Structures are given as C-alpha cells and as structure tokens.
Image 1 (cartoon, rainbow, N blue to C red):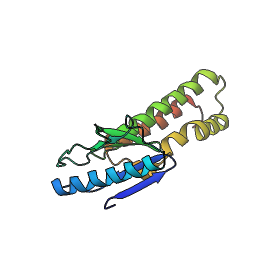
Image 2: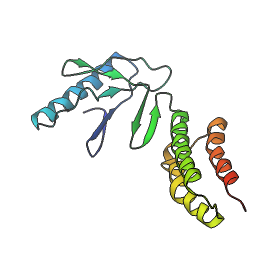
Image 3: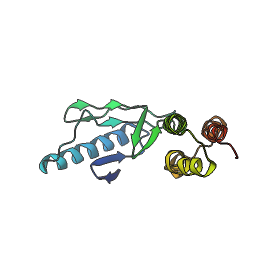
Image 4: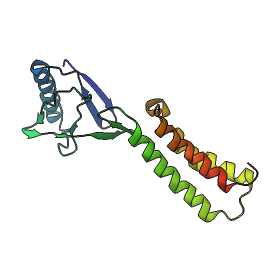
Length: 164
C-alpha cells in the first residue's frame, strides 16, 4: 500500500495525492488491494456507498472503480458528524449546525411558557450549544458569513429571554 488508509469502526478512507496518471494508477492499485483483502475476509464493501472526492480546484478528476464498478464522485460528504466539501469550506457544516439549532430553539420557544433566565440558560447549554460547538476543531468557521450565521443563534435566543 502506497497511500494512507484511515479506519474508524466500519468506515474506511483511502487517501492520497494524485497529480498525474502514475499516481492515479497507484491509488487504483491500492484500492484493488484493499478490495481483495476485504473479499478474502468476507467483509465486502457496499460499493453503492463508496465514493470518490477530488479535493482542490486544480485536481485532475480521475475515475476509480471497485470490482469493475465505477465509483461515484462526491462534492461533499458527512464523516463522523462533520460535513467535508471538496473545496474544504465549512459553509455546509455551518448551515447544518444552524438548522439543528433552529429546531432546538423552536422547540424551546413553543414549549416553555415562563421564560425564567436560569431555566432558559440551562436549556440553551443543554439543547442548543452542543450543536454549535460540536467538532469545532474540525470545522471552525473563518468566513464572516459563517460566523454571522452561528452568532445569529445567540441573538435569537437572547430575544426570547428577559433579563439578559
């Protein structure tokens, strides 16, 4: 194997830098070796779920296959709760976090009648903040529009609580 393999539970990622046809052949060869290894151990890949992501705007998008089936190309992929896009921007992850938080804020707004500050803060810390802070090391936003979207959550919450 010439390229890097990452495994977590039943997820497998084969990654490598491909700048020319030779490196693409090497990656395909490693993919074949990996497929053969799983076949001999009766742990076959679900080829319908296997995808290729070409990262970078100058990337030559080579085609890869497993067991004679061409792998589909992905623009973004969710891995361990973090959305990774082929341009490595975190806008999709921020939008996903904002959508989850909006649902939590709606739940709180519809079901809590007496909005005492201490109760609301506990609800915010337990239902809202975990979605905003989850995996921030991996997706910490550096674009102004993404930061504003996440900060919008706090402003929305503060509007609903008296005394803050």
